[in-house]
Image (cartoon, protein in one colour):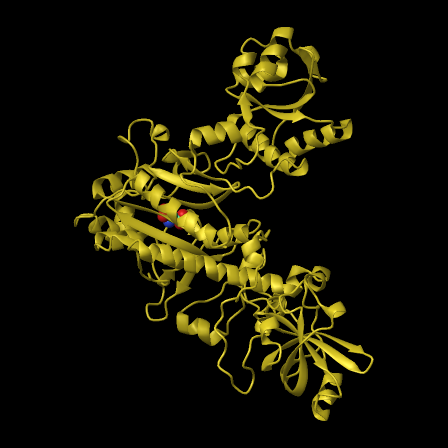
Length: 608
Ligand code: ASP
C-alpha cells in the first residue's frame, strides 16, 4: 500500500456534533484533548484485563483509542459492563482524556499517547463471536469464500477500510479534474440494447413486452457518442458495466468504468487531457508520475515485449534473431523460418541458474505453448549450451551481438509462429523478472500504446474482428489489406496492466457502414442493431473520441492490492457468485410466468 493510502483516512474530519452516542471520533482523541471530557462510540477491537483494570481498544472508522475501566473512576454498572465486553461489541463511553504512563505509550497509532478513563458506558449492540478475527491474521486463516460470505466483517479490517476509502478518494479526484475541465457527468441507461465490446451480454427479460430483452451495457459507448451528437462536447460517467465472460482470473461480471468522451478532438488532444487526469488522480493516492508518458506503437510493443500491455519497468526486451540466422542449417531454426515463423530471444543478464531451473524454464515455455526453448550462456565468443554444437561460430557471434550478450549472460530463445514466440517470451519475461527480483520497487511507468491495427483476422470465425470496437476510426482508406489499416486508438498501460483504452470514433454513416460490413455485419443487420446510431450520424455528428478506464484495476494498483476484489465492497467470486447474498439464485415459477420465460430444465435444488 502506498503511503497516502496508509495514512488515517479522516485527519480533517470535522469534529462531530455531539449526540447521545458520541461527540468525538476515536481517531481524534489526540494529545491536544488531554484534560477534556469526550464521548466516543465504536467496536471493541480488543479487551485486556490487567490487575483490576480493564483495557479496551475501541475502533471506529477513524482509528483506535484506548479506554481504561478503573473501579476508582468508572461507575459500578459501567465497570461491570467492561468485564463482560467481547470483541466486536458496540459501545458508547464517556470519560476524560489523560496522558498514558510513559511506558504505555504506543507510537504505532496517532492516539497512542493518551487514553480515556471511562466514567460511563453503554452497550449499544452485542456481537456473536465472529467467524474470523478482524485483522489480516484472522482472514489469512479462512478462505476468500468465508471472507465474502461475511463481507461486512471483512470490510471492518483496517486494510479494507483504507482500500475502500482510497477508492472514494480517487473517484473524487476524477470528478474534480473533469468538472474543472468542463466535462459534464451524465448518466446513461442500464436497461438498454446490446453495446458490443467483444463479450456476451447479460440479458433482462421484459415483462411488458414478452419475448423481448434488455441488454445490460458492456459499456456506455453508443450513448456517449450520441451525447456528442447532442452537443454536450465533454462527457464523463462513473459507469457500471456488465460483461458475461467466462471469468478469467480477477475479472468481475459487473465492474466500474470511468467513461469519457470529447468532441472536436484528435488523438493528441485526448491523450493530453488524459495525462492531466491521470497525473491528478494518482497524486491523490500519493503516486507521482510525469507527463507526457512515452508512446509505443502496437507493433513495437509486440516485437519488443511480446504483448500489447508491456511492463516497461525493466529490460529483458525481446529481440528478433531471424536475420542473424538467415543462413542457418540448424534443423529447428531452419524449419521454423522456412515455415514463416520467427526466432526470438531475450537476454536475461548475468545469471547463475542451475540445470534444474533451466529444465523448469523449458517446461514453462512448453506449458505456454512453445514447442521448446533454447537456453545458452555466453562464454567467450560462443555459448555454453546443448544447442551450441548445431550453430556455426559466425551464427553464435551474430546471435550474441543481436542480443547484446556479455560473458555469463543467460539467453533464452524460442522458434515458433510469431504470435506464439511473442506470447511465450512475453509471459516468461514478466514471470522471470518477478522471480529474479528485476522489477524495481516504487517505480510507476505509464505508457500509451498507439497505432493499433484496426482489425485482426479471426481464424475461428473466418472474418475480420475489431481490435477495439466497431466504432473506431482509422488512418487513410480501408483498402484491400484491412489488416494493415491503423486505428486511431490508444491504450494506457500502467506497470504492465492495461488501465484504459479508447479511440477517435467514426463520425459519418457511410464509413461506419463500411466498417460494419468488413466485420461481417451486413446492411440489414447493421440497420437492425445500430440503425439508431447510423441515423444519428446523419445529423451533424462532430468529430469525437474518448476513453474508458477500469476503475477497479486502477484502484487496486494504487492500493498495491493483488486483486480487484480487494477494492470492491461486495465483489463476486472468480466463478461469478456472491456467497453473501447467494446470487445468482433460482426464482419462483410465478416470476418466470410473469416474464413469459420457461426453463428447459428445472432449477437445481438450493444448496444447504
Ligand atoms: N467503450 C470502450 C471500452 O469499454 C472505451 C472507449 O472506446 O472509450 O473499452
